[in-house]
Image (tube, rainbow, N blue to C red):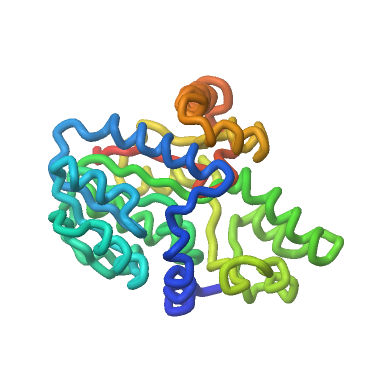
Length: 281
């Protein structure tokens, strides 16, 4: 089913005030993404942050002197980001990730993290292609990981109907969700912002790899991000993130786990649990 981007924009506007409120293991995910970014900043001058939200990454990077362009299609997100940025030299642009207004290979580093690919739903592959097209050097993308999304759909289906809904099979086989696809879907979204879960695409590792390689990208890293945190459970993670020292040590453990123990793991429960780093060939 096609993604209604006007509906999606309204939904993201409604979520803007809570965009940087870390729930469950979101702080772990964010810390791991920062570590990956830090490794890729050598010789970088220009950065495009697609789906930059309220500026969690674009603003700190601009403060460090990088030439940053921040793209989002939510006016509410952009308004908050502009206010936070103050006098910082950041270019803020309202645009859809599926049609970026830039020439090919315009930026040294392109970030596309959290929802700007997966929440394009049926247009997710197009959004990924646009990210790659604008990169002169490296892209870092995070997308929804089907390995962690399927259990969530199972829980939601059982909760609302006491059985496995058609949406569970759809997520398992195709990684797709649309609010209007099956009669049970609206009930599965109750309690979310606007009782809605946006059009959604969750990826498998091999699927994401194939799409990146089709864009003439060479992959440096691909796999789950923060799998250890989802496997430890929310209660343990809450204890860890409340202690700065524990959190730093835990992020070290998560990196080791992701790279050497379970590289294609489920990733974090919150935020996007599948990461890829790739360079232009």
